[in-house]
Image (cartoon, rainbow, N blue to C red; front, side):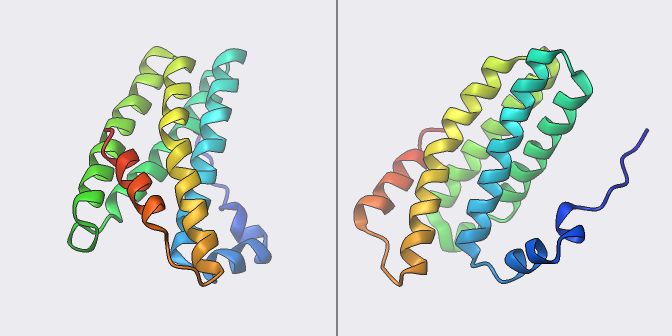
Length: 149
């Protein structure tokens, strides 16, 4: 049975407005928020034996990471974009394993990979919202994280 529900933003004009007016960095933060939320749901469903719920939550995470991969700009992002592409490709393979093996530990490992990136994007968004330039330390931290793929 297919699920034909519209996205939550379609029901909530405030959510739709916040997405449409968000900066690019804020949108990336929202994507990471959703990916991490769905990974936690994936783990919960595995622990409850809810295979359908696990698949749905994991599929949402897969779609988010796939979107992040497809929106990388190698020309502007250079080595950082290339490293993120490698990391995202690795994560996509891990997400497939989660479904194949019904493996909560792999989901926890993906959370551990995404969390520092999420924190870096959140800090970058905070700095951009405040009109502050990204610090060299933050840029280097993001590059280090992206090169761990």
